[in-house]
Structure formats: C-alpha cells, structure tokens
Image (spheres, one colour):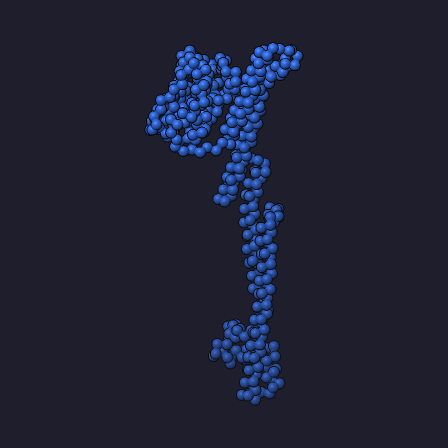
Length: 403
C-alpha cells in the first residue's frame, strides 16, 4: 500500500487516478439517468396497458366501475389464482414471467457495476505504473549515487534506460580521468616550460647586471649583446614551438588532407635549412621521384620533415644528410639519413620527449620540441616514425605514411 501511495507522487500516476475517478462518476451518473428514463417509459407503458384492460372489461362485462377498480387494486391471492386459470391457455401462468416487459425497476446495479469497472481499470493501471516507476526509481537512484545500475529489470525499455545511464556514468568517469590527466599534463608542461625559460632569462639578467655595474669596451659589449641575442632567440623559439606543440596535443589543429607530391613537400621543408647545413659543412641532398604522392596536409607535414632534417643538420659536422623515398602498395616511406654522431642507446627512448635535448647538443638555441612536434604530426596523419642509429656512424629516421 505504501508503494502505491508513493506511486501517486508521480504526476502521471496521479493523473491516471483522478481521470479514473472522474470517469467512474460520469458513467455512474449517466447510468442513473438512463435507468430513470427507462423507468419512466416502462411506467407509462404499464399504466396504459392497465387502463386498456380496465376499459375492455367495462365494455364487455356487467362489472361496475367500482368492481373493476377493486379488481385492479386487490391484493388477495384468490383473484390471482382465478386469473391464472383463465389465462393459462394463453401462456400467462404463475411464475412464468410473461408480462414482465410491462414492469419497471429502479435498480442502480448497472450504474454501480459500470463505475466499479472503471475504478478497477484505473486501479490496475496504477499497479502497472507502480511497477514501472519502481524500475525507473532504481535506475535514477543508481544515477544519483553515481553507481552502475545492477538491478534485475525485466522491462526492455527499462533495460535500455539502465544501459543509457550506465553509459553516461562510464563517460563521466572517463571525462574525470581525462581531466585529471590533462591537469597533470598541464602542470608538467608548465614546469618544463618554466625550467626551459629560466636559463636564458637568468643569462639576460646577469648580462644586464654586468652592463649596469661594469664599464666595457665596444667589442666586449658586442660580445655580451650577442649572448643576449641568443638568449632572446631561444626564448622566442621556445614560446613559438611550445604553443605549436600545445595546439597539436590539444587537437586544435585542423588538417586539410589531400594527395600531395612528396618531392614538393621535401623541397619546401629543406629550403630554409641549406644555410644551417652549409655552416656545419654538411651536404644536404634529396632524391625523390616526382611520381610519389602522399595523403597529408602539405604545410604541417613539411613542418614535421623540416624538424627532422634540422635535427640531422645540427648533429652532423662535415658530413651529409640525404633524403630518399620508397613506395609500397601499403605505405610511403621517407628516409632521412645522416653521417653524424649517432645517438647513444640511453638517449633513444627520450628523443620524442618534449624539451629533451641530447647531452651533446651544440646549438644553444635548440629547445628540444621539434622531434615531439614531428611525431605528433606524423601520428595525426596515420603515420609512424622509426629510428635506426649507431653511435659515431650516423642516424636514419624513417617516416611511414599509410596510403
């Protein structure tokens, strides 16, 4: 009973109960009116029949009006027995029911039965709603407690609702985990960035203090200014590359993927790097067929290739950097080979970590983000990067993009 009362707290169940009661009342009233109307019709018909019988008796018999009236109003049984004897030949016998069509009744049983039927239907509906809402309350209770719904539900729609609630809970957990990971990533990122900026900033502050407190010759001042320029350039590159990597890792870059000539991409990627190669005494060349195409964003893929070639130039002195390509039915491979110093085994796992620079880096402006950017861009374009190196002999970096 308590469960049904709680069910009435739901607006749908309460509406069903009210409508059932209203319909029961309406049908009861209509049935009462119908019975009353039928009673009136039957009463008139019975009166007309009795009057017709009395008139026939007055015309065909010697009975006086008083005798006829007494016959119709008498309550004795002798007259009834005599009437049954006289009319037995015509089917009018005691207990036969013949002539009941002229009688009428004021019974309210039909009205009561109709109203009771509606109330029973409404009650059955409330019981059904009670079981439905009980399952719904189990699902919503699980959602409020932020727990999976493990109740034994038999209704298909309730099962689907429970699955939807469980899916939302799983999504919420994944979102919380993702937010937690992003917070940790942001904290680590800011810590690494501040650490990287700290060194050139300290150099600028130290040089500024020297300018203020120690007079110096022009040539010495130019030397200090050159150091400042290197620090400023490092900070500028650090900020620009950090923002670029942050955009890539946040998925905020919109790629425009289409078929592009690999030769054209490599040409654009290598164009700004010839001065660096020449300064280190390197020979930068590429041998790529004009027929090889890749499905990529030309601008961003050129950025990835340029970072890898730049890294090869920085770690090669008086050697060569060569770019070649291979095409297979499954993928296109771009191989960047240098004859530089190679990579120590302990450094290989750290190559694609942001802000990581090898212990042997000679470029004071290098910020250690280029390899991370190249890896991210390549993976976004359904590709992978492989490294084959030997310390003191050189390094081969392979970019593989699926067709």
